[in-house]
Length: 440
Image (cartoon, rainbow, N blue to C red; front, side, top):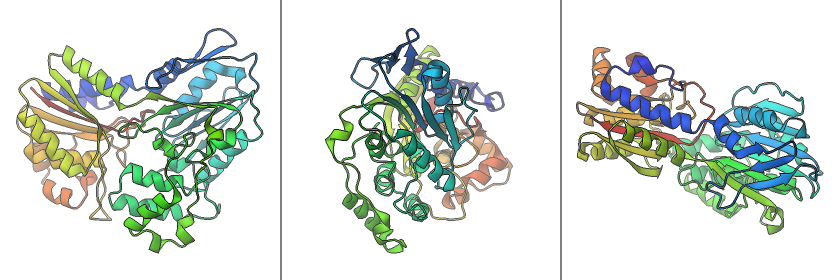
């Protein structure tokens, strides 16, 4: 079971139903399951990549007897799981590879894949070394060679390869943009233009080899050019676009480097002609699994949106209002990624905890709102939280002030003391955040 404290939280019928629906969504996006659907060997030499879902194409087929080197690269919060599956399926067919995750990876069974554990959300020397290893693995390939990428959220930070390897300005840029409430597309537009491993650069490094990139989207709207800052996708933004974003948020004047070390991304079509980018899974799959599960439980279930964005507190009020307006036995579902404009630099908490805390005053009896990060980490050890009358009572019984915690962006200490948080640990999946609103 993905939700480790399921039984502790399931103290009412409404809670048990909400948690069961969330569990179904997390199971549907399990990385091992997804990768086994995406990478299949028909016999000892026929390889099928992709299943056509989201890509608009039929699965790609390769006769490995005619292929040169097979290079496997996995990047992001799902990389460890994807690397283990790829090695299990492809085995000795893999010539070399690199897996870089934000958590420790299992040892390579064949000894042909180098594993790196990087830092997130801020870059580090470990991330730099991992990005350099990826670039090195892609050098000198020919048209006969095949590169299989698995790209997932969290990869932007891991693909840290600035113009000057000694430059650590990116950490400052990311912190300012995040605290100011910048959206993921704005942040990743800037990230593309401060690293030689993002914004299509890995496709350029792999040229002229055949490239197939399996992408797990954590970006609202599933624009794959922003997942891990699009390392294999031709970038349509420019360094000037990035500069405008930095100017808008007052970052340019704080940088120690001229124009914050911005570089231009590859624009030549030639580097992308032999690249196929496939959307392997997104929050739509999780939401549909949850909708089906809720329907089987006798609820009128509806997916209200797959690309939810906006301030966490405003989103919470919207969700609570729509739940209030819904008839009994309703389940409303959203996927996306909210933002929190930081008012208190010392506050602790994530956007999902903030959603739950902000929705709490509007929750009525027999209503539950659940918000969680599909990767299991809502800027801390909790995946998210449940908010309902039980949560409200627990906060009051603990003598805590929910309104004050919300205003101070300090949701984590409150939930740590009052309970009602969701614990999954690292799920090995990452398709943005999920919100469930249920009324009995």
